[in-house]
View (spheres, helix red, strand yellow):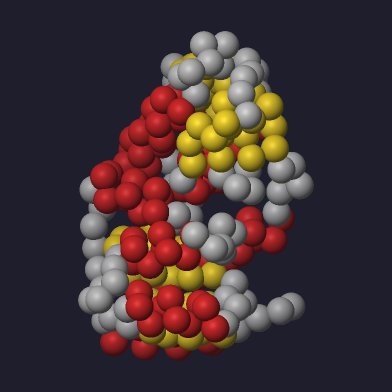
Length: 226
């Protein structure tokens, strides 16, 4: 199996050393940098399979780094490491282009499980490029919604993933727990609240076509109807 190449952005040197050594013993190839500026330079010169990004770093924080990466690379998975766990901070990470997050302090075993899951999802890929939803066209690869041929909005990575699942289950009930486990890795209350925020965002994006609705099925999940 090909060794996954990891770009680790972490300014806590002791933590970075522990994480790097642990990942290397599991077969990962790790490149470590201490801030987003150096991370941007590294990702421009090398091909990586996944990024682990601390949020609070000098010179360029993790959010800004990922926003810069997403301008040229929509696919590379990003796992945020954060000391923050407020809903708004987590949502900001997903909107910047993150795919998952871990709150410090974290278990190295959980980190490795999260990395492997993100890499598995990346490897599985998606064959469908665009889908018509009422008057909208959804381009999954470009993370765009177009209304009557014109760009309506750019979606964040998490919005993109969630809308993809809703479309795959169009006019069917999408089980809330299944989505939480697939996209968030846990169906706890905190992640449930975060998911509800993203559902609200998607409803706003789709509001210009009244024939398109995301219906809340109480106690079960959501249904995209067209």
